[in-house]
Image (cartoon, rainbow, N blue to C red; front, side, top):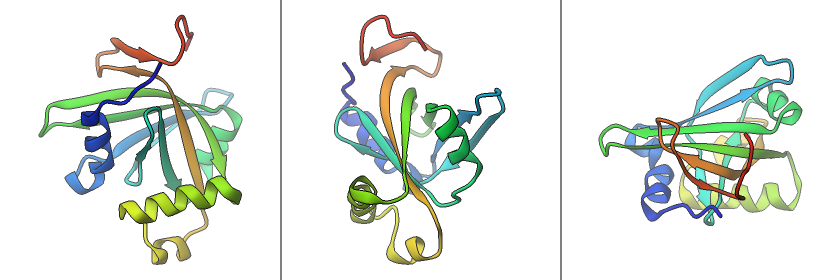
Length: 147
């Protein structure tokens, strides 16, 4: 079972404001890697992260081909960090898109102008495993999960 701690949620939700945005890493089915800093990562509940992708390009192509994603978070000022192994879904419209966009607006991570200036999608990341930065398994959705 995955249950983000209060520390994890708090630090991730203010990561951009603190100057420590998350890094999201993907790989296409042919193995081509991609990664980037994402300043709009937000926790939703105990076991989910979301973010808004405003490019509509390559990272989303990778995610739609291969939904296995790593989110890397490190805050050197707080000496805290984790790796989150996730399974992603991309939402370009519909109920999930609208609800998660509203959450990002309420959090202050995006605003109406930001939404108007970009084509994009909401990426929902179901956390499968939480690890230390050194790879020690802290939590997993189900025992014996292979990643």
